[in-house]
Length: 349
Image (cartoon, rainbow, N blue to C red; front, side):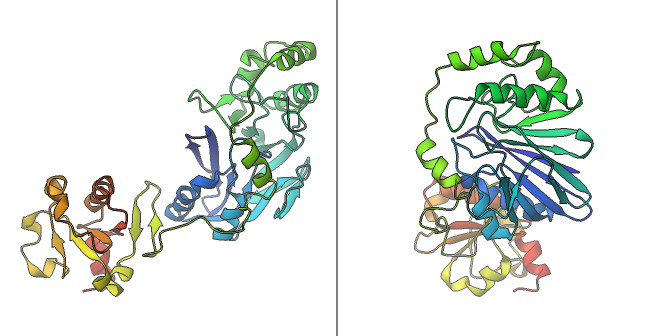
């Protein structure tokens, strides 16, 4: 199984990508609305087809990217039946099995943080995606959104702690940079439910907590009950001057064909060294030539009256040129995907 753990620094949220490497079928767990470009780029670069986008619960600290991911990929939205969110294709409950390629995720109802919390467990019970039910050395709060400390205790001890001890636990959040735990570790060391804690111990701890409500609560909850669909139903604003694709490394790119068709409308900036462009056959005209090694000192020579597309041999150096121009205040700037190599491969001149 292909597995990736991604992170949103603003909300301290983990997003998980799981995929079958043979069929290319994939699922995302707990996407974040603002990170959709990143998540789409990863699918594209790995050659995957998204089958499902799943949420572990109705989040209160960020807006899910489920609706937007469905619009972009045609995938199906999966969340707990108890949430009763709109736009959901599959409202799952205890025991449902989600298939992607040769792999599966089994749904385990684990309420207590919210009524609609579920844990997704891989085949063989090797990995458990616990949402906020079990965090690393902690758990989600139980003081709002249908939370109940006693219910949460039993979800943890009667469900998650009954998984194999070497089952890896992957939570929806961590605020201290920790990435994974295990059932054995949490049974022993979890600060709230581990070490033989009783229900009274746990409930007493949880009821004594005094936590401020999440900052995005008033925005996140209603949006997540719509599966992340914006209230106006509109897509987030995207660059409209070109067919921009954002890579997983965060670089805006355009295809060589687009540049070839729109050359009069853009400034082509070639950032190869001077000895690389002596031969006119190795140049694309018209282009502005400023070697990458000189670009920071000569950035004011780059025209501002048109969008700028950057070029080098392979597209690697020119991706840094994009960053340099953005730092200098250029907004309409992108890299040419694949550089001169892909340009020539596509038969452009």
